[in-house]
Image (cartoon, rainbow, N blue to C red; front, top):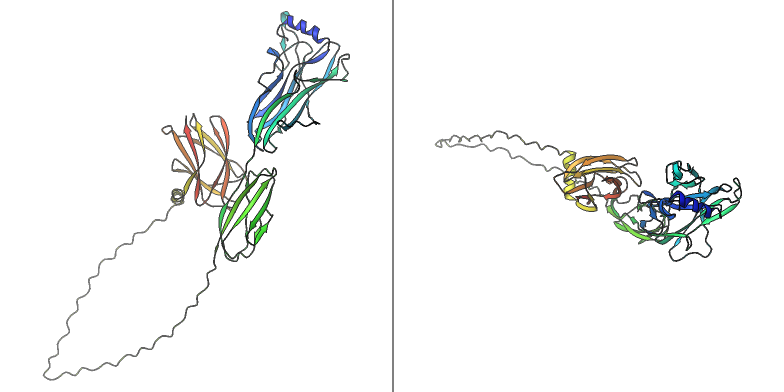
Length: 454
């Protein structure tokens, strides 16, 4: 269809029987950050470039935003006496193999995008006015590509996205819009399939408190962009609050919480409270001083014939010169954090492969901003010290050592903030690709990222 001017004349005669219709259509999807058309109808040069819609799109994590319906496009034709006034995409989402009997479609309106510029010399085709695709006289394009319909905001399972297109117009009037034309394949509506996976976690942590104090314990789910319910269940204590307050804590105990997300998935975590007993004051007994009697000196009686001996001289003790006390220099903050890094366990959070040696990353707090401080080591060398994790992103650049094929980036907690552990999220830019990585560190474990050169 529409490959040469001769074919156009033939197809124009055929199309004149219907007066208006479509010669190409496609769905616009954003998959893992990449926007692309997925063709539904059209052949040859008329086909809207991209993948075919009849594919398996893959697996996506729930609420990740990695699969979005961004829009659609229809290319329409009409004869001189006809009219096309608007286009639509009708779509529905359901569990694979469980198509509802009474389907309720969602409507995505496709506004007018461009007209064809007409024929070129010697009857050759021209492009649309926006230079996207070949066309003939009176051909039009109906398109939208700016929607953000997130298809991952559903519970785990296998799903089918089913669509068809609609054109509105008139076969007898250049201004009327009283006819509806549905665009489907020979076998029915167009379909693609994909999977949604679901997982989450809740942070377990330890905390030391004073005996008799009031303590609030926290449930910290990840990711935070979901709705959760909580059940704390421990000996002599239960609560459905997210962050319950414990009053007058007297003994060390472990508190268990079960969190359930909006899809019914459960995860259990624990909070270990170590209670330090209060130190009692010991009263010192004051002893009465003992009375010491000094005996009276006895006079020595010397006989006439007794020669009094002179007392022997006592040699003076040798006084050695005082040695100067060596002063111990106080450790710097950098030395202290390096010692902490070496005494804690490095836990691998993720491993990435790369080709070029330029790494850019942004760090920020994805949950509650509570004063977390971290230090970063690159191949055992301290490169950033006391970085405060805030809601506002902080950007860093790092050139990886060309003489090494394996690189270690270690995140060490300077403190635990108001709520343990020390948490943050990284946006990594490596080889032109973007990755997101959540990190958690505490007084026992460091978070390790490893980079390997391909």
